[in-house]
Image (cartoon, rainbow, N blue to C red; front, side, top):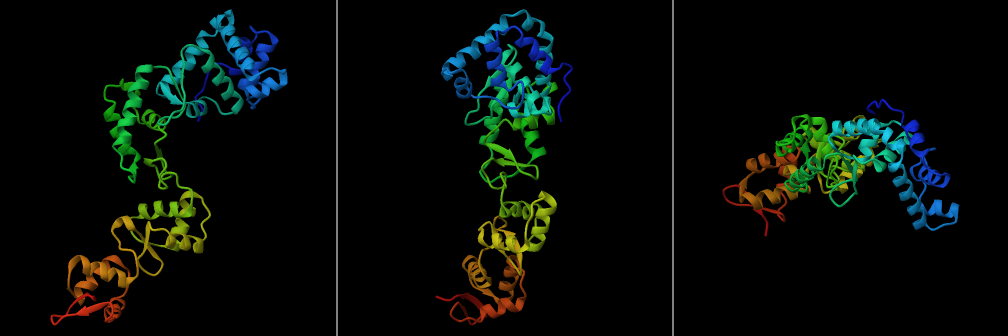
Length: 343
Protein backbone atom coordinates (compact mmCIF):
# COMPACT_ATOMS: atom_id res chain seq x y z
CA UNK A 1 0.00 0.00 0.00
CA UNK A 2 1.43 3.38 -1.00
CA UNK A 3 2.50 5.84 1.71
CA UNK A 4 0.75 9.21 1.42
CA UNK A 5 2.93 12.04 0.08
CA UNK A 6 1.73 15.61 0.66
CA UNK A 7 3.18 16.97 -2.59
CA UNK A 8 1.98 16.39 -6.15
CA UNK A 9 4.85 14.67 -8.00
CA UNK A 10 3.66 15.76 -11.45
CA UNK A 11 3.45 19.40 -10.42
CA UNK A 12 6.91 19.26 -8.83
CA UNK A 13 8.39 17.79 -12.03
CA UNK A 14 6.72 20.47 -14.11
CA UNK A 15 8.30 23.21 -12.00
CA UNK A 16 11.73 21.56 -12.10
CA UNK A 17 11.65 21.04 -15.88
CA UNK A 18 10.62 24.66 -16.48
CA UNK A 19 14.26 25.68 -15.97
CA UNK A 20 15.33 23.78 -19.11
CA UNK A 21 15.35 24.57 -22.84
CA UNK A 22 12.97 22.52 -24.98
CA UNK A 23 15.36 19.73 -25.98
CA UNK A 24 16.71 19.15 -22.46
CA UNK A 25 13.15 19.09 -21.09
CA UNK A 26 12.02 16.68 -23.82
CA UNK A 27 14.95 14.30 -23.26
CA UNK A 28 14.32 14.08 -19.50
CA UNK A 29 10.57 13.70 -20.04
CA UNK A 30 11.16 10.77 -22.41
CA UNK A 31 13.96 9.16 -20.39
CA UNK A 32 11.93 9.10 -17.16
CA UNK A 33 8.47 8.63 -18.70
CA UNK A 34 7.10 11.80 -17.14
CA UNK A 35 4.27 12.24 -19.65
CA UNK A 36 3.14 8.61 -19.63
CA UNK A 37 4.32 5.17 -18.54
CA UNK A 38 6.82 4.71 -21.37
CA UNK A 39 10.48 5.32 -20.57
CA UNK A 40 12.55 5.78 -23.73
CA UNK A 41 15.99 4.26 -24.20
CA UNK A 42 18.99 6.37 -25.20
CA UNK A 43 18.89 4.71 -28.63
CA UNK A 44 15.20 5.49 -29.16
CA UNK A 45 15.69 9.17 -28.34
CA UNK A 46 18.84 9.30 -30.47
CA UNK A 47 16.96 7.99 -33.50
CA UNK A 48 14.23 10.58 -33.00
CA UNK A 49 16.75 13.43 -32.92
CA UNK A 50 19.22 11.91 -35.36
CA UNK A 51 22.05 11.85 -32.82
CA UNK A 52 24.10 9.14 -31.07
CA UNK A 53 23.05 7.50 -27.82
CA UNK A 54 26.15 8.98 -26.18
CA UNK A 55 25.08 12.47 -27.22
CA UNK A 56 21.64 11.80 -25.66
CA UNK A 57 23.37 10.77 -22.44
CA UNK A 58 25.34 14.02 -22.47
CA UNK A 59 22.14 16.05 -22.92
CA UNK A 60 20.47 14.12 -20.11
CA UNK A 61 23.35 14.71 -17.68
CA UNK A 62 23.61 18.37 -18.65
CA UNK A 63 19.88 18.85 -18.12
CA UNK A 64 20.02 17.27 -14.65
CA UNK A 65 23.00 19.48 -13.75
CA UNK A 66 21.17 22.57 -15.00
CA UNK A 67 18.15 21.82 -12.82
CA UNK A 68 20.35 21.42 -9.74
CA UNK A 69 21.74 24.94 -10.31
CA UNK A 70 18.33 26.53 -10.90
CA UNK A 71 16.24 28.45 -8.36
CA UNK A 72 13.39 25.99 -8.90
CA UNK A 73 15.57 23.20 -7.45
CA UNK A 74 16.25 25.17 -4.27
CA UNK A 75 12.53 25.83 -3.88
CA UNK A 76 11.82 22.07 -3.81
CA UNK A 77 14.01 21.44 -0.76
CA UNK A 78 10.97 20.58 1.39
CA UNK A 79 9.76 18.12 -1.26
CA UNK A 80 13.09 16.28 -1.26
CA UNK A 81 13.22 16.35 2.54
CA UNK A 82 9.76 14.77 2.72
CA UNK A 83 10.89 12.08 0.29
CA UNK A 84 14.03 11.49 2.34
CA UNK A 85 11.97 11.13 5.52
CA UNK A 86 9.67 8.66 3.74
CA UNK A 87 12.66 6.51 2.74
CA UNK A 88 14.08 6.71 6.27
CA UNK A 89 10.74 5.44 7.58
CA UNK A 90 11.06 2.48 5.21
CA UNK A 91 14.53 1.62 6.54
CA UNK A 92 16.99 4.13 4.99
CA UNK A 93 18.02 1.49 2.46
CA UNK A 94 15.25 0.07 0.26
CA UNK A 95 15.09 -1.87 -3.01
CA UNK A 96 13.97 0.33 -5.88
CA UNK A 97 10.92 -1.77 -6.71
CA UNK A 98 9.70 -1.87 -3.11
CA UNK A 99 10.37 1.84 -2.59
CA UNK A 100 8.41 2.92 -5.65
CA UNK A 101 5.55 0.57 -4.81
CA UNK A 102 5.40 1.98 -1.28
CA UNK A 103 5.25 5.59 -2.45
CA UNK A 104 3.05 5.41 -5.55
CA UNK A 105 0.15 3.38 -6.93
CA UNK A 106 0.49 4.08 -10.66
CA UNK A 107 3.49 3.74 -12.97
CA UNK A 108 3.54 7.38 -14.08
CA UNK A 109 3.81 8.63 -10.48
CA UNK A 110 6.56 6.08 -9.86
CA UNK A 111 8.45 7.56 -12.82
CA UNK A 112 8.25 11.05 -11.31
CA UNK A 113 9.54 9.80 -7.95
CA UNK A 114 12.41 8.00 -9.67
CA UNK A 115 13.23 11.30 -11.42
CA UNK A 116 13.50 13.02 -8.01
CA UNK A 117 15.69 10.22 -6.64
CA UNK A 118 18.13 10.55 -9.54
CA UNK A 119 18.07 14.33 -9.40
CA UNK A 120 18.33 15.21 -5.72
CA UNK A 121 21.38 15.11 -3.42
CA UNK A 122 19.96 13.21 -0.41
CA UNK A 123 19.58 9.98 -2.37
CA UNK A 124 22.27 7.46 -3.34
CA UNK A 125 21.65 4.67 -5.80
CA UNK A 126 23.42 1.32 -5.51
CA UNK A 127 23.19 -0.81 -8.63
CA UNK A 128 22.13 -4.44 -8.59
CA UNK A 129 24.97 -6.87 -7.99
CA UNK A 130 25.39 -10.56 -7.27
CA UNK A 131 24.17 -10.26 -3.68
CA UNK A 132 21.67 -7.39 -3.64
CA UNK A 133 18.89 -5.84 -5.71
CA UNK A 134 19.08 -2.27 -7.00
CA UNK A 135 18.49 -0.02 -4.00
CA UNK A 136 18.24 3.58 -2.78
CA UNK A 137 20.05 4.80 0.33
CA UNK A 138 19.66 7.81 2.60
CA UNK A 139 22.09 6.65 5.32
CA UNK A 140 25.30 5.01 4.11
CA UNK A 141 26.27 3.71 7.56
CA UNK A 142 22.97 1.92 8.07
CA UNK A 143 23.14 0.49 4.55
CA UNK A 144 26.63 -0.87 5.19
CA UNK A 145 25.60 -2.56 8.45
CA UNK A 146 22.46 -4.03 6.92
CA UNK A 147 24.28 -5.42 3.91
CA UNK A 148 27.03 -6.93 6.10
CA UNK A 149 24.43 -8.55 8.34
CA UNK A 150 22.58 -9.95 5.30
CA UNK A 151 25.77 -11.55 3.99
CA UNK A 152 26.47 -13.09 7.40
CA UNK A 153 22.89 -14.29 7.72
CA UNK A 154 22.91 -15.86 4.26
CA UNK A 155 26.20 -17.66 4.85
CA UNK A 156 24.67 -19.37 7.88
CA UNK A 157 21.70 -20.83 5.98
CA UNK A 158 22.12 -24.34 4.55
CA UNK A 159 21.16 -24.91 0.91
CA UNK A 160 17.94 -26.84 1.56
CA UNK A 161 16.79 -25.02 4.70
CA UNK A 162 13.38 -23.39 4.99
CA UNK A 163 13.14 -20.99 7.92
CA UNK A 164 9.90 -19.50 9.32
CA UNK A 165 9.82 -15.74 8.75
CA UNK A 166 9.43 -14.78 12.42
CA UNK A 167 12.49 -16.89 13.30
CA UNK A 168 14.62 -15.37 10.52
CA UNK A 169 13.52 -11.81 11.36
CA UNK A 170 14.42 -12.35 15.03
CA UNK A 171 17.88 -13.72 14.14
CA UNK A 172 18.48 -10.87 11.71
CA UNK A 173 17.53 -8.17 14.23
CA UNK A 174 19.86 -9.77 16.79
CA UNK A 175 22.68 -9.24 14.30
CA UNK A 176 21.71 -5.57 14.09
CA UNK A 177 21.52 -4.83 17.82
CA UNK A 178 23.56 -1.63 17.37
CA UNK A 179 21.05 -0.18 14.88
CA UNK A 180 18.83 2.65 16.18
CA UNK A 181 15.65 1.39 17.84
CA UNK A 182 13.45 3.19 15.30
CA UNK A 183 14.66 0.76 12.64
CA UNK A 184 14.41 -2.38 14.76
CA UNK A 185 10.89 -3.35 13.66
CA UNK A 186 9.66 -6.47 11.92
CA UNK A 187 8.40 -4.49 8.92
CA UNK A 188 11.77 -2.81 8.36
CA UNK A 189 13.61 -6.11 8.91
CA UNK A 190 11.44 -7.85 6.28
CA UNK A 191 12.12 -4.98 3.89
CA UNK A 192 15.85 -5.31 4.47
CA UNK A 193 15.68 -9.08 3.98
CA UNK A 194 14.03 -8.50 0.62
CA UNK A 195 17.14 -6.60 -0.53
CA UNK A 196 18.93 -9.93 -0.88
CA UNK A 197 19.07 -11.73 -4.21
CA UNK A 198 20.44 -14.87 -2.57
CA UNK A 199 17.56 -15.63 -0.21
CA UNK A 200 13.83 -15.28 -0.75
CA UNK A 201 10.41 -15.95 0.71
CA UNK A 202 8.11 -18.73 -0.49
CA UNK A 203 4.28 -18.46 -0.67
CA UNK A 204 3.96 -19.96 2.84
CA UNK A 205 6.15 -17.27 4.42
CA UNK A 206 9.27 -19.42 4.79
CA UNK A 207 12.73 -18.19 3.80
CA UNK A 208 15.56 -20.03 2.08
CA UNK A 209 17.85 -19.78 -0.92
CA UNK A 210 16.07 -17.92 -3.71
CA UNK A 211 17.02 -20.48 -6.36
CA UNK A 212 15.57 -23.38 -4.35
CA UNK A 213 12.35 -24.85 -5.81
CA UNK A 214 10.94 -24.69 -2.28
CA UNK A 215 11.26 -20.90 -2.40
CA UNK A 216 10.74 -20.05 -6.06
CA UNK A 217 7.89 -22.55 -6.37
CA UNK A 218 6.50 -22.56 -9.91
CA UNK A 219 5.31 -26.10 -10.66
CA UNK A 220 2.72 -28.49 -9.23
CA UNK A 221 5.44 -30.65 -7.69
CA UNK A 222 7.02 -27.62 -5.97
CA UNK A 223 3.68 -26.56 -4.52
CA UNK A 224 3.02 -30.17 -3.48
CA UNK A 225 6.32 -30.27 -1.59
CA UNK A 226 5.32 -27.18 0.39
CA UNK A 227 1.84 -28.58 1.11
CA UNK A 228 3.04 -31.98 2.36
CA UNK A 229 5.86 -30.38 4.33
CA UNK A 230 3.36 -28.06 6.02
CA UNK A 231 1.03 -30.99 6.79
CA UNK A 232 3.87 -32.96 8.41
CA UNK A 233 2.29 -36.31 7.51
CA UNK A 234 1.79 -38.39 4.34
CA UNK A 235 -1.07 -37.15 2.16
CA UNK A 236 -3.14 -38.67 -0.61
CA UNK A 237 -2.41 -37.07 -3.98
CA UNK A 238 -6.05 -35.99 -4.31
CA UNK A 239 -5.77 -34.14 -0.99
CA UNK A 240 -2.54 -32.54 -2.17
CA UNK A 241 -4.17 -31.33 -5.39
CA UNK A 242 -7.09 -29.85 -3.50
CA UNK A 243 -4.78 -28.12 -0.99
CA UNK A 244 -2.71 -26.59 -3.80
CA UNK A 245 -5.83 -25.00 -5.28
CA UNK A 246 -7.08 -23.77 -1.90
CA UNK A 247 -3.70 -22.47 -0.68
CA UNK A 248 -2.06 -21.08 -3.80
CA UNK A 249 -5.00 -20.59 -6.14
CA UNK A 250 -3.28 -22.80 -8.73
CA UNK A 251 -5.25 -25.26 -10.82
CA UNK A 252 -4.07 -28.76 -9.92
CA UNK A 253 -5.68 -31.72 -11.65
CA UNK A 254 -5.66 -34.82 -9.47
CA UNK A 255 -4.14 -37.11 -12.13
CA UNK A 256 -1.49 -34.54 -13.01
CA UNK A 257 -0.56 -34.17 -9.36
CA UNK A 258 -0.14 -37.95 -9.00
CA UNK A 259 2.03 -38.14 -12.14
CA UNK A 260 4.24 -35.29 -10.98
CA UNK A 261 4.78 -36.72 -7.49
CA UNK A 262 5.63 -40.23 -8.64
CA UNK A 263 8.37 -38.90 -10.94
CA UNK A 264 10.02 -36.60 -8.38
CA UNK A 265 12.55 -38.13 -6.00
CA UNK A 266 11.61 -35.67 -3.25
CA UNK A 267 8.48 -37.78 -2.68
CA UNK A 268 8.03 -41.40 -1.60
CA UNK A 269 4.86 -43.39 -2.29
CA UNK A 270 4.14 -44.97 1.09
CA UNK A 271 0.69 -46.41 0.53
CA UNK A 272 -2.23 -46.41 -1.88
CA UNK A 273 -1.89 -42.92 -3.30
CA UNK A 274 -0.21 -41.65 -0.10
CA UNK A 275 2.95 -39.61 -0.49
CA UNK A 276 5.55 -38.64 2.10
CA UNK A 277 8.77 -36.65 1.80
CA UNK A 278 12.04 -38.46 1.33
CA UNK A 279 13.58 -35.95 3.77
CA UNK A 280 11.54 -37.57 6.53
CA UNK A 281 13.63 -40.73 6.19
CA UNK A 282 11.26 -42.85 4.11
CA UNK A 283 12.99 -45.40 1.89
CA UNK A 284 12.07 -45.17 -1.83
CA UNK A 285 10.81 -48.27 -3.62
CA UNK A 286 8.21 -51.00 -3.21
CA UNK A 287 7.67 -52.98 0.01
CA UNK A 288 10.29 -55.53 -1.00
CA UNK A 289 12.89 -52.75 -1.34
CA UNK A 290 11.95 -51.37 2.06
CA UNK A 291 12.40 -54.80 3.69
CA UNK A 292 15.84 -55.16 2.08
CA UNK A 293 16.99 -51.77 3.39
CA UNK A 294 15.72 -52.58 6.88
CA UNK A 295 17.54 -55.93 6.98
CA UNK A 296 20.75 -54.39 5.63
CA UNK A 297 20.60 -51.78 8.37
CA UNK A 298 19.52 -53.92 11.33
CA UNK A 299 20.65 -57.43 10.39
CA UNK A 300 18.49 -60.58 10.76
CA UNK A 301 15.02 -59.85 12.19
CA UNK A 302 11.91 -61.80 13.10
CA UNK A 303 8.74 -61.47 11.06
CA UNK A 304 7.07 -59.29 13.72
CA UNK A 305 10.11 -57.03 13.97
CA UNK A 306 10.15 -56.60 10.18
CA UNK A 307 6.43 -55.84 10.13
CA UNK A 308 6.92 -53.21 12.83
CA UNK A 309 9.75 -51.50 10.93
CA UNK A 310 7.98 -51.60 7.56
CA UNK A 311 4.75 -50.22 9.01
CA UNK A 312 6.74 -47.13 10.00
CA UNK A 313 7.79 -46.74 6.37
CA UNK A 314 4.69 -47.80 4.45
CA UNK A 315 0.95 -47.62 4.92
CA UNK A 316 0.32 -51.28 3.99
CA UNK A 317 -1.38 -54.28 5.57
CA UNK A 318 0.78 -56.78 7.52
CA UNK A 319 -0.22 -59.53 5.07
CA UNK A 320 1.41 -57.58 2.23
CA UNK A 321 4.70 -57.63 4.14
CA UNK A 322 4.36 -61.34 4.97
CA UNK A 323 3.72 -62.21 1.30
CA UNK A 324 6.90 -60.39 0.27
CA UNK A 325 8.92 -62.29 2.88
CA UNK A 326 7.87 -65.61 1.33
CA UNK A 327 9.98 -64.96 -1.80
CA UNK A 328 13.01 -67.29 -1.34
CA UNK A 329 14.93 -65.52 -4.10
CA UNK A 330 14.87 -62.32 -2.06
CA UNK A 331 14.82 -63.45 1.58
CA UNK A 332 16.00 -66.41 3.66
CA UNK A 333 14.85 -67.62 7.07
CA UNK A 334 17.15 -69.18 9.67
CA UNK A 335 16.41 -71.80 12.33
CA UNK A 336 15.46 -69.06 14.82
CA UNK A 337 12.84 -67.70 12.46
CA UNK A 338 14.83 -64.58 11.57
CA UNK A 339 14.91 -63.24 8.03
CA UNK A 340 17.91 -62.01 6.04
CA UNK A 341 18.47 -60.77 2.51
CA UNK A 342 19.14 -63.71 0.16
CA UNK A 343 22.66 -63.77 -1.29
